Image (cartoon, rainbow, N blue to C red):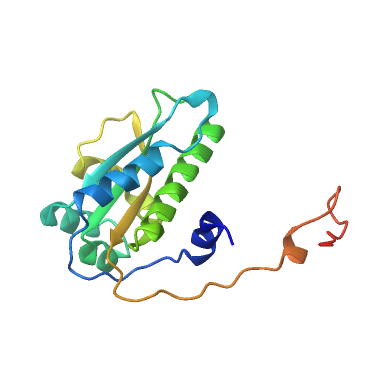
Length: 176
């Protein structure tokens, strides 16, 4: 199986980490992977904030029900949509999703654990205050990253028959 497919199929959401820090080199690799995601008109509508300071992490932990994940991760990356460079909201949010997926796959390839935290968006204004963000930045996600303390759960997936159609909705997809 090609390596990229193997990485996609082996990626897991990891929520528990060792105390070992993530190296500067690995952080740069993760950010580069995000930076190289596709975007409409190549507008690259993302901004990333790298967070390693314990006090900042403690403040951010108060912004989510998943505070333990944030407190235990040695690295957080807040992912933002830069609304000043945005040209089409839907396409730009899709680009942000591609950047996040690239970053998660890079983490997997580097043998790091990571999870995409979305619930924290419920307190985006509070997060923005903590991270001193201008109003032009809209929080899209926070990634918690570290050396995995466990392998994560094997996720279930719907079968292709349940989610794929041939030519028109309702026509069964034949995998021949």
